[in-house]
Amino acid sequence: MYLGLDLGTSGVKALLIDAGQTVIGSGHASLDVSRPHPGWSEQNPAEWIRACEEAIAELKASHPEQLAAVKGIGLSGQMHGATLLDAGDQVLRPCILWNDTRSHAEAARLDADPRFRKLTGNIVFPGFTAPKLVWVKNNEPDIFAKLAKVLLPKDFLRLWLTGEHISEMSDSAGTSWLDVGKRGWSSDLLSATSLEEKQMPSLVEGTEKAGALRSELASKWGMQAGVPIAGGAGDNAASACGMGTVAAGQAFVSLGTSGVLFAANAAYLPNPESAVHTFCHALPDTWHQMGVILSATDSLNWLSEISGKGAGELTAELGDTLKAPTGVSFLPYLSGERTPHNDSAIRGSFTGLAHESSRAVLTQAVLEGVAFAFRDSLEALAKAGTTLTRVTAIGGGSRSHYWLKAIATALGLPVDIPADGDFGAAFGAARLGLIAATGADPLRVCTAPATDATIEPVAALSNAYADAYQRYRLLYPAIKAATA
Image 1 (tube, one colour):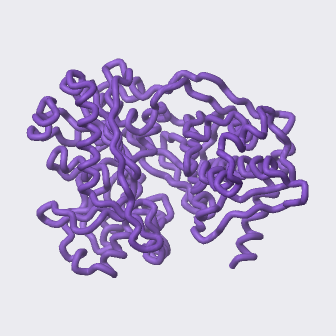
Image 2 (cartoon, helix red, strand yellow; image 1 turned 45 degrees about the vertical axis):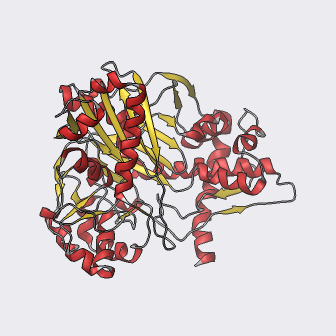
Image 3 (cartoon, rainbow, N blue to C red; image 1 turned 30 degrees about the horizontal axis):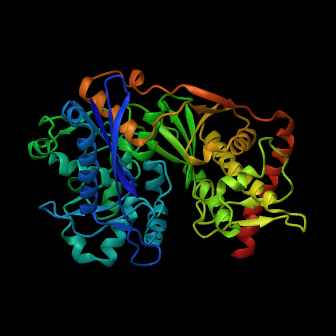
């Protein structure tokens, strides 16, 4: 048996698989986010331990014998969080999370230093870890003075599980301290934020062993002491391992609260100017790129809330046949946008509204707007040298075949729908635990799920969609200028 532990923003999931990668069982525990000030987002790391304990206790209650047979553990987690520890490994303050924007001024100053984009291959975003540490230095100097170690969220769980300070490449690539091409900490970038490499965890690949389960925890859970724990991955890279998106040319589109167009790469292909994320993958000598949309299904949920109709009711009104764009356009920038604009201040809009613009027309525009935002990410990936021939759809929004038809037609790519199953970050983490424990070939373990169906672009609407996309592209600079 192999165990995957995924530390998300809203909860911890523990997933058990057997040697054939069949899911045996799972446990879950919820987490809350603290927002003490506008733009702040924090969690107490002690809550992560509590939730992990509860998730594993649920798994033990239902599958005690299988839990006892675990031979490897993998970790996945929310990225970018700044977990600050003193010399005795005590937490100095609540963890500043990935969606915390307090360090926007510090991020802009770091991003103006050309070394950051050159070495990391990325813009320094406010959500990344390095600017958060500069904020702490500027605003909480007493805490900064006690700082001995900075850990990412899943690696704080690893410290509790193993007693060791270790991270891996995919998660560390989102800190703004990693030389992403060389896969190692940059002393220059650390120095630019008044830190030293000794304050960072040691680094391994996601498929390598990174500590072993402490005997006290093994005894409590009825497991063997010394079970190897894999380096693991950041949440998107772990999901990619679960989806089998690990070789060049493979890609998925994640239609969740936010949206991600994720492509695996065999080489380091940065393009920071387009706000594409270029990170190390969880597998050795592999990288990945991501275009990120901040409001994907969140855009439909927003329309659902103000219209008083469920999201499923709204999409059902459109039927199954893809319609030509109506001339009503929607910019899905309800909380700013990441790729390609890196603009936290821009906001969404409808344009082209008329008396005949019904609720269904607005729904159609929302779905098309998100599809065109994915097209923006596809264009950004192309500028970075990545060409895609098809994508696999995951996430809650992928239940709408109309939406997938819109995305396929906007991208000009077939969209594969995987067969039912759990292919998320916890499953990817369990796969990494299997690889670390057995030495198995990662490409043989991280295979893609069977395809249940394929949504092809609607050729008859390709020109209409191309015209609508051009209108969409013209709207961002116009709205930006009007609201500046």
